[in-house]
Every structure is written in structure tokens, then in C-alpha cells.
Length: 210
Image 1: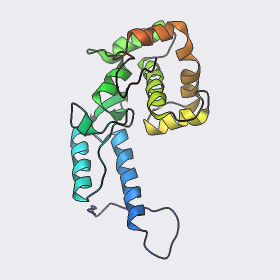
Image 2: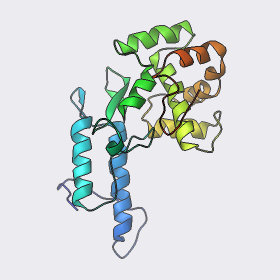
Image 3: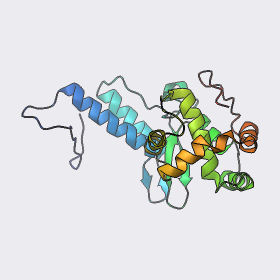
């Protein structure tokens, strides 16, 4: 495999012999997938297109049966209308976010084409939520559960931790747990989710999360 001189591959456990190729492949693939999920930020710009291209090119060069895939809907870029993942911001000032396909990105933002964060802030505050991140986390959980069926209860902090880690959500586990377990079941929040979202009935793998 091609590694820059400052790159390191760490394999769990201590062994006297070299790790098997399959195990090295799994470790490296897991690393690249995590990097794709959080996006590559240089100065103030997330470089999702360039990183998607590079990761896919390396996989092909190494002969791996692996493809850049949206972590939320699990569709590879070969099945998308675009050939790279987009970037969903959780925080704009510090460029904290996660890389997802454009359909999932629109879904998380409530399908507001313009001034997305401000529109969502307004809706969230009308519902007694903090800001657009609260609504986005609720939508995130809806789609994540519909696609992945994680086998964890909505009120389980382990599920909140899963969301936080997988999608790079800059919130405390307690806050995510409360949003996912309680808020989306309130009638006014549910109505807002039904009315705004790249339609909650986005037809990806027959998923109707609301």
C-alpha cells in the first residue's frame, strides 16, 4: 500500500509476527472511512470532493472491493447523482461537520435551499429548541434508525454515543439522548419534521422515517 512517510498503521494487540494482510486492510479501511465521515478541513474549507476522489483512487490502486459510501444512507457514490460526498455543518465557525450524500444533507437541513441555518434556527426556536443543530440531530436519528436498525433504544446513551461518534456531532451525549428520545414525539415538532425535510419521505431504499 502507499503510505506517506508520516503515516502510521496501528494494529490492536501485541504480536511477535506481522499482522495478516486482511487485518491491515481492515484497519486502514476503517481509518479512511472515519476520515471521510468527519471531512477534511483545510483552513476554513472542507475538502470532501478531493478527499473522496483520493480515497476511491487508492482503493482501486490497492485492488480493494471498497467504495466511498454515505455513512447515513449507506449508498456508494456509484449510486448517487454526484461522485463525492457533501459536507453537513454542525458548527460553521469552526467547520465541524460530517460528510454525507447530497440527499441526506438536504434532509438534515430541512430542504431549505437558501440560508439553511437561519431558517432552521427560526423553526427550532419556535419549537423551544436551541437551534438548527437540534432539529438536524432529530432528523439524523430518524434516518439512521431507519437505515441501520442499530438495536439500541432511543433513550439509551449508547445510541446517542453511536450518533455522536459516527456523525461527528459536537454535542454532549445527554443532550443527544434527550433530543432523540423525547422531542421528536411532541406533536408540534413532528408536524415540523413532516412539513420540512427533503420530505421525510425521501425514497432511499424505501425508507419513510416519519
